[in-house]
Length: 168
Image: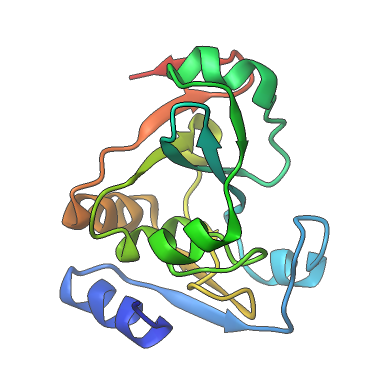
């Protein structure tokens, strides 16, 4: 599994500018208000899910976004969704609960996880994610996020959670 140093080396190799703030671990969106105040841009919540068909999903949204899991499966074309097992999270994304992040896709070398990006987050610049552990927050530009995903061969499904529809 890749480490924070590996992630930053990947960013550097692909021209993704990044800025990181170390802080005490945070486990919920409601925590870390001083971190959000110190770092502009979209702050995220990230959900690792598994559907009834066995497909794994990573949802990255603005922290204040409401995500209705009972309706989302209709929008993204999945089976019914539930939270994914911790073992699978570690196996595919290399992260533990509280540290789920889009940057974990760097560890999904078998492309087992489908990535859903909140339209509001896709419109935010910069965006802030944990760099594989929840004791820091890393900001990248929206263009940098797209460069990161493209380098991994990941095409995000963009969902407008307010309208509950896929866009683009």
